[in-house]
Length: 235
Image (cartoon, rainbow, N blue to C red; front, side, top):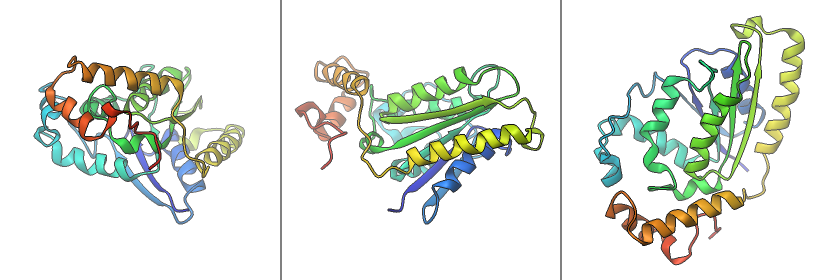
């Protein structure tokens, strides 16, 4: 089965983090389609906090650039997010991308397609643990509705890929193979208890009008989510 893979790279350069993410993509590629985006190259803007996207996503000042990326994500089966660990967290350009797509969170207007995707977060650091950087990304992907999220991160003790030791690259190779095998599964990803609970809580919020906008209630009604048709149910 052919799968569409989207890579969201939180840097323009191709360092250790990018190389590992690309290794994962290549392991599961075959006939699969790989689309890559780089931040800030492909979306070099900060969220203006205007909330126009809540009323109408096309009203975002950066809609044209954002739509190219969100359309690719919408049609993808697998999302690979790479970010170097900068000051213990994800890169600023990647954070800006997630800020600009907050309207896709379960609390607002999530995409139904997100509940059937797999994702992996890749992060490396020169010395300290990349856990906090990966947690940043995991939170964003979870609230977008992605049910299966894997993480792969480690300190590489190097400033670039060429500087990573042979032994460490051997360890990375094994880790990449394990992650690729999980992402290649033909089983339908299942929404976990936490995802189901948060989504149903958001549904109660929209049903009672405790949301940001009436357009959100309309969106949820149009998708049938206020009538028990959950987005993770296979049609």
